[in-house]
Length: 319
Image (cartoon, rainbow, N blue to C red; front, side, top):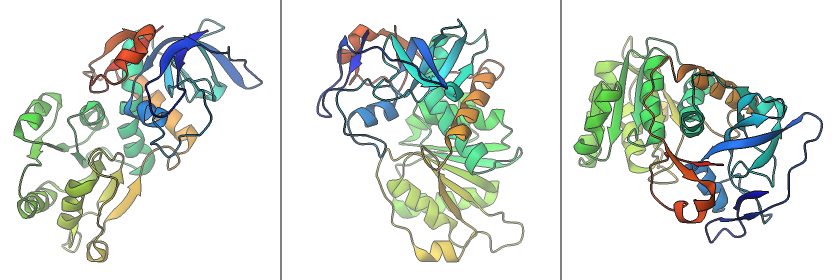
């Protein structure tokens, strides 16, 4: 079958022939229609993700949209190695297949799944978000962050506070439902004070962090002492991505002096069933929620040239 093939972590996948997948008991063969080029897929294929393996060659792609042998159209997650989703056919666990609403097209479903799942799972599976709470999204200008705004509002957030590189980058996020816009190009002390003021004025309950690094440190420093006043709720800080750095300096005093709850959300911290459940919820919400999702279809045969093209997570390879 035709597919994308990863033969080395040091170069982009090539388009070529690979062995056909064979389904065992409890598994499903899928005829792939669309597979998104997500940061997660690229990170795994480059050997930079904690779930990357060492066996070559393999087909990249962690999810997609396709049809089962029964003809049912599904979103599918986590194909079984070495067969990924960027192929004519792949194989997945039966439990990883989610029927799609007829009104949701293949391209939108494929592009929205991974970035949308990140905030849906973080809110529902990790933070135990409750309608009426306020959410702060650190790093909301990318595909995942933009969806996180819309998902937070769909799930009932009272207010959504967002951050981005500068004023120009955060300004368009108001159109997606963001209530408070915080540019990150401020002096560290001023940025920390900006966070501290907004935490108190707007009663932030949940923080979704896509950036890590200096901005996350500013937020944690701003939380120090929070919760000591009557009526100040504990803050659940959910680490999702590390766009700007892989670590933070964590002041012990910030933990001792506040009700801060630190947690992560991703492969491993959320059970497989929880991730699938989150994606099912997302897929059922895209159309009624009128989510705005940018998507670009690229033929799978062009995988090598499109792989490193910056498309802000909106590319899906179509078969």
